[in-house]
Length: 199
Image (cartoon, rainbow, N blue to C red; front, side, top):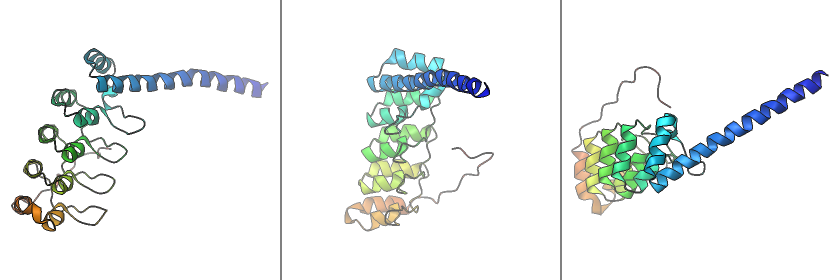
């Protein structure tokens, strides 16, 4: 009798939890699809009803709304999501933040906006690369200047070759102007963290 009762409760729990989980996944998918489609009504109503959706991650890539609009060079939606307090340093499955994507694709205006919104210029991806390393490797002097002006550290080394942004600039004859900017950069100071560290 007890085993039958337990099985009945377990089955009832499964019936209740599966639809809830499926509903949550559908909401996440619908929101990110709306972001990709720039469906203004769907995006704004979804965030108004459930603020946490703004930080939803794509199941395959790990991209958030900020990643999506950064890839698309969409400054208006980027500003909107930052204004709505999207978590600005969330990483996708490659360990990339929206700022890293901006540095990778050479979108200086987007990088500036993300930095003004509080993006960490010294965060690293799964390979240990920083946005500054990416900018140096792309020979993007304007991006390098934006990052340096916002306290990017040229001495952080990656996991791939153990080289820093300055190391990469020094070994490339085409990067003399970049090397000069890096050498003139003021030493970065580590921020003192108060309270629990963000995850």
